Length: 440
Image (tube, rainbow, N blue to C red; front, side):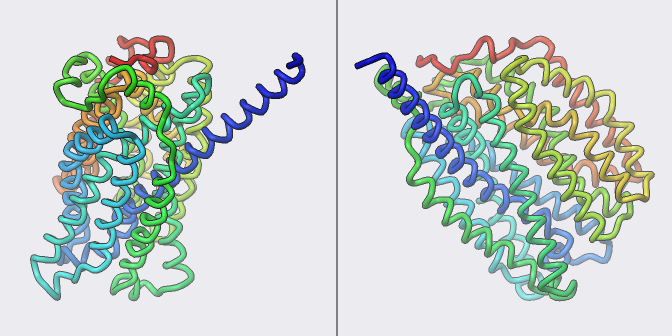
């Protein structure tokens, strides 16, 4: 074969390889988007369905009840992180990803058909809690499995860029939920219809989308890293095997704590904050959150690609420093403003530093662990930390608000980011010290 023929064959192989990777990342990301759409539909429509499940004349109390239930679902995420992480490390990433989206389908469908408090009394919030527990179990497994899958199928030279699409689709799930909300608000239903029965529609949509995602994920190819690891060592995915890496486990907890608190503040809680604290109308709230999330989505691949050139650590330190210094001024100013545009700019300003965490946190965690415990190592300590500091952020903020000291939450969040900054400053840069090719 001539040199020219060899080059042509290599180019053809490279094109095929890129197409295969992009297809795998697309399918994995779409499933992730569907999962997070289902999960965030709860938050997007909480203002409408909270009275149906938590009857109380005080809207702040209603939202607090909904937020407490939101936080309670996070208690299942460590169990999901363990279960689906075990499946991913023992039986393959594809199976774990498929099962997690099936679980989400069931959770969303239950919410769609649950009778209200007026019909079945206290059983209504109990069934709602069951559905959210199932969804929490699903998401607990989704993060570790999808982070592992996207990282393993990515081109090593562009691993930060490709893995950033986990949060592109994660935020995209929330954007999709808001788009459905806008369509129902502005095109198809009246406010009365939305509060009466229209809030069920997004959960029906979510269940149907989850079925489509599950079918797509069945056709995913297994990662080469997992297949190679099976030839070298028997897959484990066990807690005993994971405990061989105590330093890495603690690093996941430390680097996640501040980031997850910031993420859930500027996504989940922000819709409630600008409505109840800033005083924007429901329409203004929806547009402000929608616009800021589009901005956040655009930042993810930019920051992820940047990390492939300068490393992961500089971006994490940027998030830690800027978040520690800017959180209190941004939230304080945001509460005082009455302008939707000013609110939009302030939330976007926060995303300039929050994206330093969200864009690369998945790849950083995946690069800490060898293949045979990677999904469990990423998913379990992350799920525990999110349960403690991420899912509780809206409830803590609303609790401080009921006490008349909403500003306490601003300092709480700033302090959490500072604690993670200490970890960022002392940890190694995983781009230059990666365990991606280790099988132990």
